[in-house]
Image (cartoon, rainbow, N blue to C red):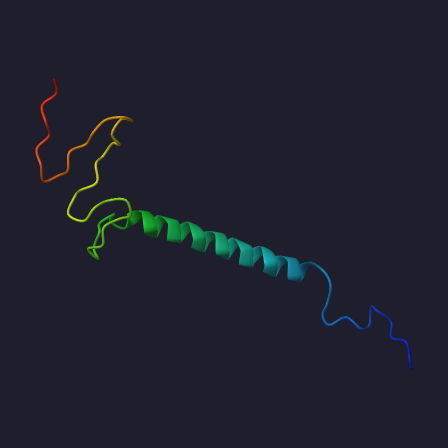
Length: 84
């Protein structure tokens, strides 16, 4: 069996062209990721499908701020009791 010099057995040229291709691919991936972020931020935050988010009963709108700990929150279809 003959011995092959490792430098002659390489599949491609060594040097900077491979590095340039890898850097260009990484730059394009970053640009695509930033573009998807801007596209996602521009979409409305509406419940188009009609499915209630987790933790919220259907038909009740989620409150803007959470209720303080220990407080009782009345359901949306019943009026709140007056505070004493």
